[in-house]
Length: 163
Image (tube, rainbow, N blue to C red):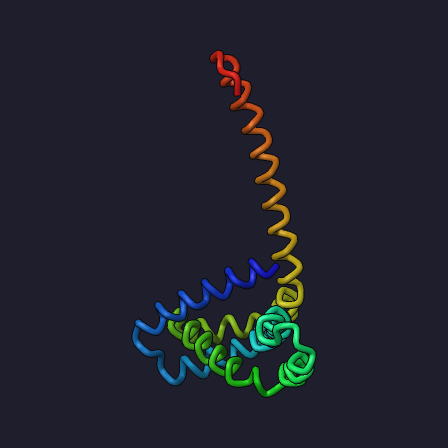
């Protein structure tokens, strides 16, 4: 799952950098994008992922020293102010990305969809669906690799090779 988060973070960073090079979105587009980002609960997703990231950083910072670990834990407790500036900057950057990618009308239509029951249900189930979809893809790829390996091995044997 952490590889998945890193991939998403990298993609977002790339998209944000590309969006930053484009023309700045209008204030109206930014307002609509911020509203959509709030509806999508992107800040909640960030806050949910941060404690895991901070836990991974803990051994690097604390270096197995209990006195540092205790203070580290207090500083990085869920909801700690240490996260706030990063969350705010990320939300602004993602809003700018959405504002640069869609028209104001499109942003409003997307936001309207996600406030409807079907949109809310999609948001609720999106993580589970993404995980299940990834597993289906991995399973299909493994079956394909196994089958292709068998077919290619057999074809090479028919040509006189010993694979």
